Length: 449
Image (cartoon, rainbow, N blue to C red; front, side, top):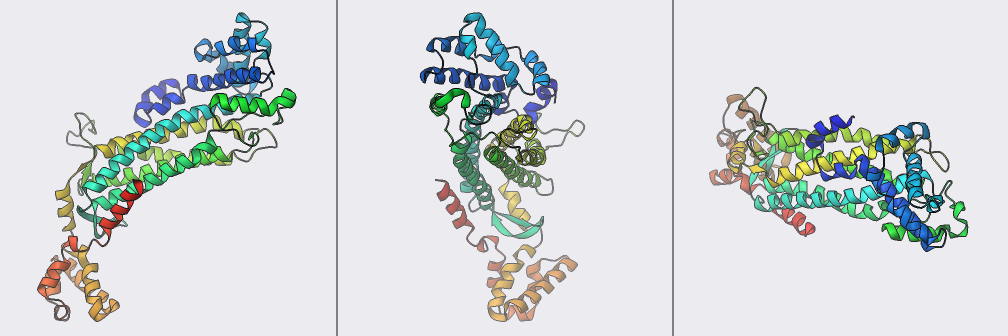
């Protein structure tokens, strides 16, 4: 996608701070941060002269580099790190010709590229964690405020049983909280140094390879893995899978919100504002625009995750093709997930809930939604199967005659011999058939706390 296209679409499809984290400049700066830290670590361990550090680190600023030239040179050289190291060496030579000899000493291109993107991931995780917390807060408030708000529970897109809107929100919240736990668990595995030299042995550093690696990891505030992971891409694949799963969960939330916004349902709405969600031709429209953006991300994410997973099959000590496939895919996936998360955090914080419409929708089937409640009460006396058949027949009759189920049941002498009129009235009150919905909401909220 061209830079012009990104400028047009990023605010809609992404638009989060993560888009800046994965900009071209940030990609370059991540690699340069590796190079500056490498010089400091090697000077600290006596591999290069201490006097070389200032000149090298002083030139590790992305704004001093010619990005179009780097991009052009990468075509012939296979990656961005090689022309970057050449430009860095030239810049350092202007300041200190002797220091220029020690640029990128003992490292390989993949060390700079992988560690650079890990540094970008760290910045992205901060944004993701903050927006996950915002979404969690908004969902917890909805679950708390609507713990006892009755609404229609739907299965296969049909009315099923009464639930509460708080239970629906608690279900959303429970999924989000699991993603927060996954991300916290993944963080230390993901944020680690890549440093192995040409073939993973750090042979160019003689006997000081591990000492340099320890100093380099400490300088960059990254974990130090047991060994380089040039062709062991499991953790990156895990992160991609996390982003895909998160986007899928956000898509589920967006699907629910957009269905609830349907004119015939009208139970909840994305926050309204002048010009928001309008149509180019229909003045009355109020479209679920944030949900649409999230759902679009959920459609795109699985293919990107699949690319990362497919790229795990890599050759020997350094890869040909699989590693390179990650360069564009992982940032795109992170930006998509972060944009979807931002949209959904804002949507849930401003969600407009129509509790009166929820209550009216419970009556839309003229009592059919309470059929199971009647069946279970009758089953105690008649047996479940007999009660089921009796109530099912009454439901068919109610639909055919377009009458309320309660009226039809009152005409069934067998049923009324087992249930009094007050019993029947109680059975048709949705608030009396919510099971442990309130307790489940409390459990989710307690687990979150």
